[in-house]
Length: 204
Image (tube, rainbow, N blue to C red; front, side, top):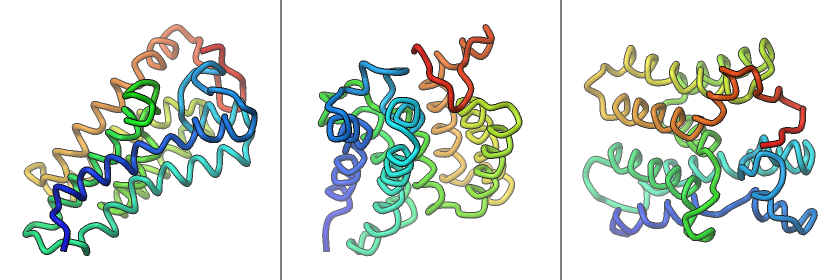
């Protein structure tokens, strides 16, 4: 059996794999941090490299959060595997946002990786949050607005189902606050009416 602290570190390394950066280099020989919005997330990949590559990046980023949560608890006999699963999820999200392979700079905003992690930790609340995301995206056309709305909805539903004293509620609330922090530039553009709609290229 593997010590769970080692698995937390491995979760961070998995989360750190910069799929969008690799996609830009392989597909077009470019650094996506210098194109589009400069963000290493699936939305910017879509705008710069197209839908097919963006789809691959989106699935890969989600799996970075899901795999540690689903697989790693079975590799250790440590007590409270539920708490360790949350630790694996947090580590993977942190890796995506601050990738060690990119010298802790220029990662993504963590939404896809967080979605994969919480889909494994809390499937029903995550599916509801995903439905809200899709609804907002199609109604208003803003990926950022959909992400922010889903980030708010998720802890609310978890709190209703698990109780506000649940560790999962606490972590989901912290992740929601973190998503708002990583989207602070998007929030400013939304308030000014300058946020690009999905499918349109963004200057930044």
